[in-house]
Each structure stands twice: as C-alpha cells, then as structure tokens.
Picture: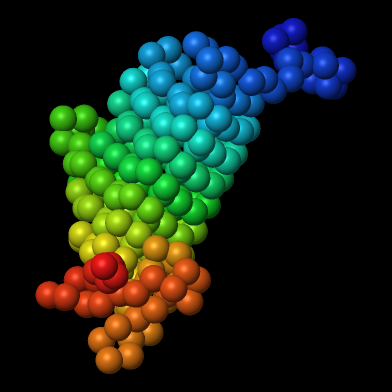
Length: 216
C-alpha cells in the first residue's frame, strides 16, 4: 500500500493552521479542514468551522456561524446572522433569511419522490425559511414549504406544510400547539393579549394569525 499520500502523526500536528481570510476588507474565518469552492460569496465576520463544504454559487451573509460537518449546496442563499449547528446540509432549493437558527442534525430535503436511478435536479422544490425562525435538533423539513417569521420548530418534528409566523410546532407530522414571541418564549393569553416575558412585547391573534401590538 502506498502510504506516501497519508499524513503521519508529526505532519498532522504541523499542518497548516486555521486562518482568517480578508478579501476587499471583508474578513471571514474558514477552518483549514473545510473546502470553499470558487464563485462563493461569504460575508463579513462569518465563521466556518471544521469539515464543511461550501459549494459554488452559494451566497452567505454577514455574522453567520457554521459548526462542524456542514454543507451549503450550490446556488443556496443564506442571510446574515444565521447560526447553523453541527451536521446540517442546506441543499440547492433552500433559501434562508436573516437571523435563522438551524439546530444540530436537522434535515432538509429538496425532492419529494427521490430515486437513486432517476435524475430529478429539475424538480428541486423551493423551501423558504423566513427571518428569525428556529429549527430544533433532528427536525426534518420536507421540501416545498415556507416557515414563517420567528416560528419555532421543536426537536424531532417533521414539517410537511407551511408554518405560520410565530407558530410553535411539534410532533410527527408537526402540528401547531401554540405561539411564541420574537424571543422564542411561549405566549400565554389573557383577554386576548399575550405579553412576552423576555422583552415585554405585546401580541394578539387577529384573523387566526399572531400580530405584534404596536403602541402609538
């Protein structure tokens, strides 16, 4: 066996260290074990940690964080302030807006009826995660849905239909069991009004949707 292509212990210890990259005054961090293809845009102060792969055509905003073993597929758009935990693959067809949280090992799909022997790249369905929503660990997002602003998807849930803004979703398949505020706190209603314990924001349900009460 040709062992020349393998690193020995000393070579591994002395390998090139993780680095910060500065392009046109935009600085971001990519760990040396990760791969970033050509034709990729990465925003300022974004950090990409161990064993990740960012594919060509993807755009990542400012102040994002990618944990270990993450993949960003070709032509994926990710907003700013997004936090992606370990073991998450964001496939082509998925769009992620600002301030979204993707929990560890959560799963996206991009084809409804995959077959190993049929190429369905032209059938990728769009999945949209709106600003500020959070997806719990090990949740599955079936392609073709929109998850509304600040919605909270519980760990292990399976989302197979659109989710309203601020909705709290759990179960398989997921069902709505309540509402959350922007902070992620569960809301309790008294005389039709809920107050977020975290920041004091007031909410009301209007036409079956949660809306923030703005005081004039």
